[in-house]
Image (cartoon, rainbow, N blue to C red; front, side):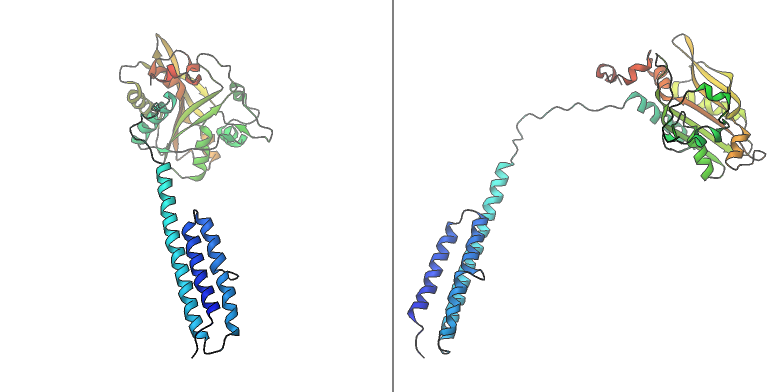
Length: 334
C-alpha cells in the first residue's frame, strides 16, 4: 500500500490549523456560527476537499477518510469549546449589567388605602353574610323590564316620575337601583331566598351636598313562608346597630315604593338632624307574581340604601361630593 498524496494530506492539516485559529479568534456566537458553516457546512471547505477522494485509488481512500474524520472531530471540538466559553462570557456580562446595588435607597411608594365607599360596602356585606345572606350582582346596563316593569312599575305608572333615568339609544337604560338584581335572582331561584346586592346606580339627580348622579346602592331581599314586617324591622335594627352602634337614634316613617307594600323609610339622627338612609317594605304581591312565586304562600321584605349616605354618617362627612373629589388630603384620613 502506498502513502496518500502529500498534497491532500497537507491540505487537510492546513485546514485544521486555519479552522482552529479562526475559531479561537471568534468574538461572538454569530461569528462562531459563520466559521462553522465555512469549515464544516455542506458547501464548506472540508466538504470541498472530500470531493477529491473520488479520484484516489481505492487502497488510499481509507487513510484519507481516517485523516478527514480526525480533522472534522478536531474542528468540531474547537467549535464546541469556544461556544461554551462565549456563552459563559455572555451570561457573565448579562449578570454584571443587571446587577442591583442593594445598598442604594429604595423608591418610596405610599401604601394604598380602602376608599370610604368601598369600606362601607365591604362592612355591610360582612354583616349580612353573617346573617346568612348571599351576595348577588347584576349588570349596570339594564332593560326596562327588569328595572321597572317587573318591579310593579309599568310605563304609565306615576312612580316613574320619582326618578329620572339615563336612557340609552338602544332602548336599554342605566339601572336606577339594584332592585333589578332581585328580579333576576328570583327569576332563576326558588324560595327561600336571602340575598344582598351591592352595585353602582345612576339617576339624573341634581348634584348637591347629599345627592349624586352616580352612587352606590346596597339592597337586601328575603323571601320565605311567613315573613312579616316585624322580621323586616328586626333585621334593619340589628344591621344598623352592627353598623353604627347601639346609641344611634333610628326611626321608621311610612312611605311609598311601587314594589313594596307597606313601605317605610328609615332615618338616623346625624349632626343634629334626621337623615334618611334607607327605604324598605314588604315585597308587593305583584312583584312575586312577576317571577312566578305564589303570594298566597310566600312573603318577603326588601330594603335598600346608598353606601355614600352611610359613609357620611359613619365618618361624619358633611358633603357627598368630598367622596368623589379624589383629594388625597381627605382620603388619607381613612
